[in-house]
Length: 293
Image (tube, rainbow, N blue to C red):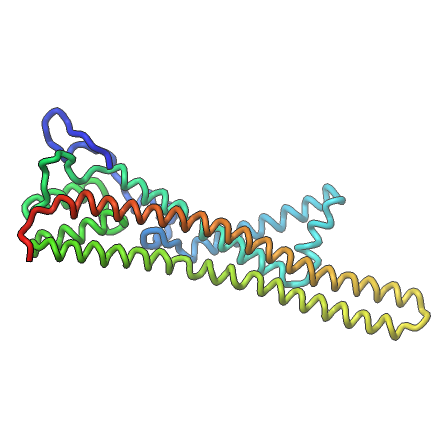
């Protein structure tokens, strides 16, 4: 946290930076209902995913028209049956969910730059000073309950002000820490579902392509000596095999890319929660000077 005091000696004037969740949250900026903490909303992410999917398909259509040698790439998405379309939509939906989640996490991390607890070594948290700290939080942010760190501190200090027992404060901090971790894990639920569903769509495309190839191969066997019929049926066979393998390839590449991004973002959120735990331990629990139960 930011430290320091002004010449007038007021430790609560050390930081002048104000965070307004209602205006700065990435979803609230566009008029949507913002998800709690780092949980992304489904509606704005779905709308953005539709736009990205439409842009992607428009781009590859234009590319193959301008540069015919890229037709092999466009064919993987345009000529391999219906499965690539929902695959790419789910991919872009998961991608936008992760992007919004990342932006919300960056906004939450800005709370580390605000000083709400005086940094003087002699300062202690008591029932009397708890109200001043809570008032300071309300001055710095629009609502402490929109921030992971400030929500924990506010709940702990509310208990401190009303009850005045350090054991209760420590218990609240621990329970709230567990709740935050559970909420972060739950926020990945729909993304994990997409990461499971994308390969399944690829395997469905594989079954579809193999069925098409086997059916066409049967026509080849019954064509006899008709070379024209054999050639036409072989094209269908190879087209079915291309559908079988390329739909799986696209799905696995998408799922792999999402897994890498999810792993990176989970590491960031884990570090963020660890920092919140450390600040609460040092700045709140470490400064309590109350009568024990």
